[in-house]
Image (cartoon, rainbow, N blue to C red; front, side, top):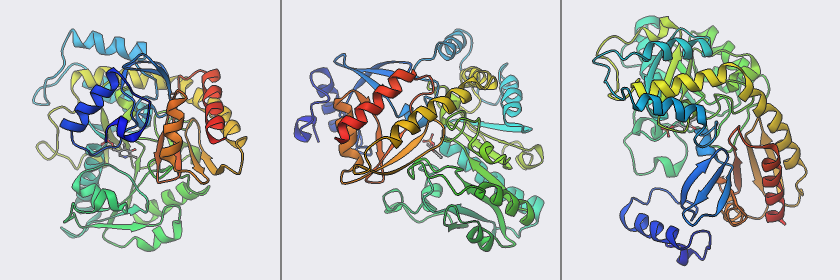
Length: 408
Ligand SMILES: *Cc1c(COP(=O)(O)O)cnc(C)c1O
C-alpha cells in the first residue's frame, strides 16, 4: 500500500518515492509506519524530508545507546581502518578481549559469538541438547526443551515451530520436534512439564514482543530453583531485556537469579551491526568441539571492536542507573494518563507496554508519528515504549505529553 492509499501524511516528497520502491521491489514481510528515516543522533531521527522524530522504539532495544553513540562510532571507525573479517579459520586480535570482558560482565566463563539473535537462540538450543545427551545422560534423540506461551525468540523454522503466534508459524511447518510449551509466569506448570528427558527451560525473563509482560515476583527465582533441582539448564533469552534496558544489566538481576546461559543480541551490536552471543559456564559450553557449530561472521573483528565498547560502557553501571531513573519518569507519566484511554501498563526500567482502550496500537502509533514520536504497536491494542537510554529527561516528558494529546 502506498502512503497516498493509506491516507497518511507522515512521508511525502523524497520519502514517498522510497516507499514506492520498497513496495514494488522488496518483500512485504513488514508493515512499517510510513516514515522514511535518513539520519539519527542520540534519541532523535530525521526523515528524508528533514522532519525530526523522537525514537521511542530504539530498534527493539538494539539502540539502547542511541543512534551513532560517539564511543561506538569511534570504535567501529578505528576498526574499519585495521581489519574487518577473518573468519574463525584464524584468530583475530580482538576476540580474546571481547570474550574475557563479556564473560566478566555476565559473571560467566565462556562465550560463543554469533550475529543475529535467532542464531544465538539456535546456538543455545543445540548446546542444551548436546549437554543433555553428554552430561545428563538423556537417551539420544529424546531431548525436550520447555518454552513459554507468548514467547518470541526469532524467526528460524525451529524457533517459529515452538511459537504460539499463528502469524509467525502458520504455513512454515513441518517443525522441529522436542519442545513443550507452558504458560509464562506459572512455576507449577513448569515443574509439571519437566521429565527425565528435559534438558532446558528457555524463557525471556520479561517478554518483549509479547507486550512487555513481567512475570509475577518470585517467578524467576522459582524457575531457577526448579531447574537446579531437576538438573535442567535455565536459558535466559535477554536479547531484548538485557544490557541495561530494565535498569539492571540483565532482567534476571531483578530477582538475583543467574541462569545457566544468557542469550544476548540486539544492543550488543551497539546499533551498528548484528552481534549476538551465548554466554555460559565452561562446563556447559564445552559440549561444542571444533567443527560442531559456527558462523562465518560470528566473532569478526569489527563486531568484537563494537562489542568490547558496549561491554565497557555497561561495566560502570551508568546506563543501568539512567534507565532506572528515567524509567521512574516514564512510569509516573504513564500512570497519569486518563484511565478512560489506557487500560493499564507494565513498566520495568526504561521499557513499557501500554494497553489502550478503544483504539488499536497501530492507530495510536500513526498519530504519534504525526506528532513527531515513533513507537511500535504489538498485539492489537498494546504499544511498546523502549526509548534509547541516552534520551534526555525533558524529551521523554515531551513524548509522554504527545501520547496524552494523541489519546485525547
Ligand atoms: C529480537 C529478539 C530475538 C531475535 O533476534 P534477531 O536478531 O531478530 O534474530 C530473539 N529473542 C528475543 C527476546 C528478541 O527480542
